[in-house]
Amino acid sequence: MKRIIRSFLSFAAVLLAASIVPYRASAQDRLKLSTIVIDPGHGGHDPGCISADKKTQEKNIALDISKRLAQKIGESLPGVKAVLTRSNDTFVTLSGRADIANDIGADLFISIHVNAQAKGTSANGYSIHCLGQSSREGNDLFSKNLDLIKRENSVILLEDDYKTRYQGFDPSDPQSYILFSLMQNAHLEHSLLFAEDVANAMKGGPIAHSRGVSQDPFWVLWRTTMPSVLVEVGFITNANDLKTMRTPEGRDQIAANLLKAIKTFKKRYDGSMSAATAPEPAAAKPQAETKPAQKEQVKADPAPEKVSESTGTLYGVQVLATSKKMKSSDPFFKGYTPLEVRSGKLYKYLLVPGEDLAGVRRKKKELDKKFPGCFIVSKDGETITRIP
Image (cartoon, rainbow, N blue to C red; front, top):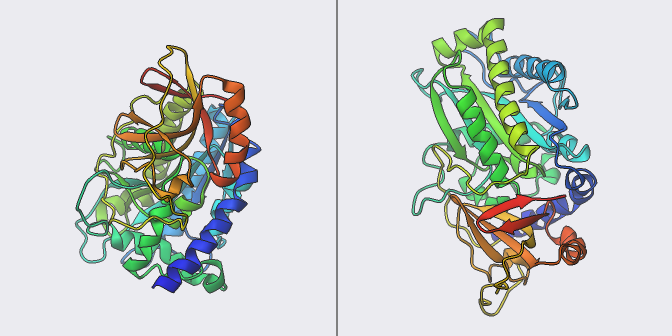
């Protein structure tokens, strides 16, 4: 297992480094939600979940809803471009889906799926998933969602070169998920906000039951360098959910509700980007304790960053937003001493804080290579605002 972890961590470092250029070239130069990538799950020789009568496949439901959503975005949100990771019945690798979003510098990533119950038909409803760690202590990460996580990640095994592409990662082995200690990222905050927008927009829809928002280790979400969510729109194993998803009207209403969530998120995203209070996931799933992913060691826990008593605005580079409190000596920070800011249910960590914005911009250039996706924020009291 240690050998697998070392191999995977080396591979992960390459993936993170590869994502720097696409993201930096776009998202950091604007504060507008202008490009959305919609990812219809599965496709081609990967049908996803299949109904009991074998007449309906997840890949077709996901594609139809995704195409309807893309069309609605084009009709009602001028200036917003919707890009599909697949527009027909073709197979796209998990890493390939994330690469599409990263390469075009997308501002939002939405992966559409259909759920299934391993045994029985009683489970129903929609759920929204984003990447991150639960704030709950002492609970088993895999107690509720492991079957779903394993099923969605198992698409890896259908790829011809998966042993090379996903070195050492076994989607069927719970121990492999220790590697997702790497999943903390600067975009968790807005992923959680959008996930709540989706949950609220889908209330009272054609599939009315909400299973809430959870944080889970889906590979495709970990690989994207922007706010990202995975939506399970309903259960193909439940008669009522399936009946809704089989009708054009039902699929169209699901797409309409997703559009409603996007509009809510866009209004917030295009504004000041202030996120002083981020909602806690409605049903966050805990994560097992893991060892830090980085090898670099820091001898002692540095003292907290001291900030001037000036009432002026403070600037810094946000490198992490997480629901778990981090030690300033954590190898994640690569020897930098972070400034911790509590924001609602999240802890945000800023590096190189100071009142000189130009100085912070200069320092950010060296951080771009070490913390892909980092961005500059201003701190005014308890309010954290992203700035260009």
